[in-house]
Length: 244
Ligand SMILES: Nc1ncnc2c1ncn2[C@@H]1O[C@H](COP(=O)(O)OP(=O)(O)OP(=O)(O)O)[C@@H](O)[C@H]1O
Image (cartoon, rainbow, N blue to C red; front, side, top):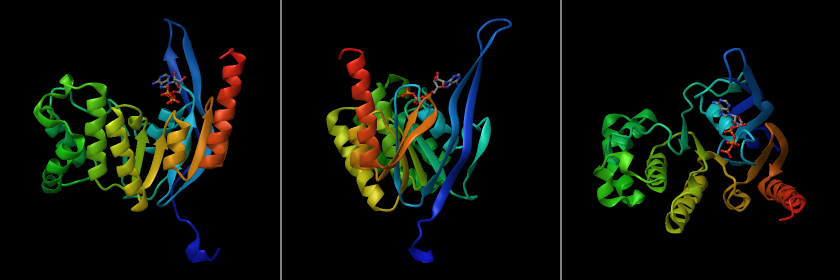
């Protein structure tokens, strides 16, 4: 491959570890290693899937990639000015504000100026299919409705790296199909995405490359098809062990 054809890393994780300390009693602390020495490079324009069981460290990794929490050791290297947005259920919404105001705030938090953010609102309203609920406080929303608003807002805003945590797993089938199609359009438009899901089929459809996390370590990394097949085999073995 010539120098000019080489994929360009837009973010790298170098030996990232995350240990959570929780106080479990007056003199007792519990320490848990959620991520253990994770290293990978994210190429500009790629869609990287992250699969793994509950508690394997997927959300912790996304929050670290977004810069919301700092790793206990290791580092995330990302050039200054590269905008990252985390799309996650129940994150960052103000329950007493309406969907409209949250969409406005969310767009501005993700780097849009006020005029741009105001101009996004009709499209966000339409894509989310929230109808009259768009002007109701978000505390009245179901989980699926919150996901619709979050997804529709993130879709509109232009960030270099979109970090998506499980949001396609909620909402009804119609919205899921629509969201998947919109994601694929964005991906073809050279959006860089990290996509976390418990659903290997979905990762296979959407992602080119994938990482499988197991107990905070990278268990496999490579073409999405291969990694998800390995992950499925692992789940099947677990199912068999439990007599399922
Ligand atoms: N703030 C926290 N304090 C203490 N422990 C935490 C905290 N956040 C996560 N953990 C622990 O770290 C581990 C990884 O959690 P994480 O949410 O990253 O996993 P996950 O793969 O996203 O799980 P799920 O699929 O269930 O969402 C879990 O054992 C969890 O209990």
